Length: 213
Image 1 (cartoon, one colour):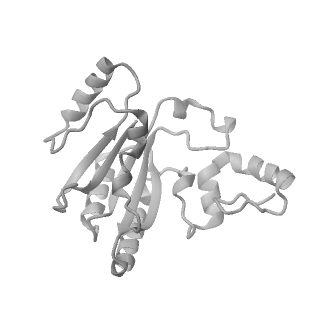
Image 2: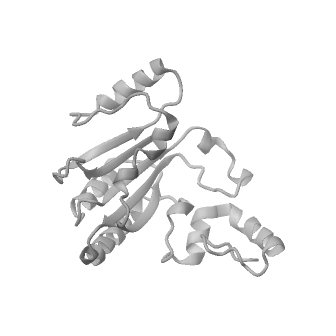
């Protein structure tokens, strides 16, 4: 697993940095090879790569999402990261109005991308980068400008985006029909038929809703 983020330094200085979070579940020797590759990308400000318990891994980002923070997220999926896409991401982050916001890139690859799309309802089986524009602020006065930044950044990335999107990151302000198609793709028609059979009154709709056929 590999996640990269455009964010600010954890020392409170507000200095922009690129953060990389990785997880290698395998031999320590193989993990060290991958770690050396990651460390070779540029000047390393903080190096915390090393063996940790799985429970600690699941909680290692908790401090970045403090209790009481306001959030507005927008997400898309980039099948590739060419120079123009990288430039668009960097420019978008440079316009970020508050230091608690960030842009994250989650690498999709491996076994998850080898499962046939029709085998499960989950349709995002592409190789690429799930891209999350994470607007987060502590002061209510920052709400409008942070939300506007997230939406503007999402709009800039549309020209690089694929057709599928990650369901967990689709917000309540998305167009319902477009969100369902982006999340479930070619599986949507079959899922609507199942919804008609098991939930014709659409009781379970507080999600990326699948309306009955």
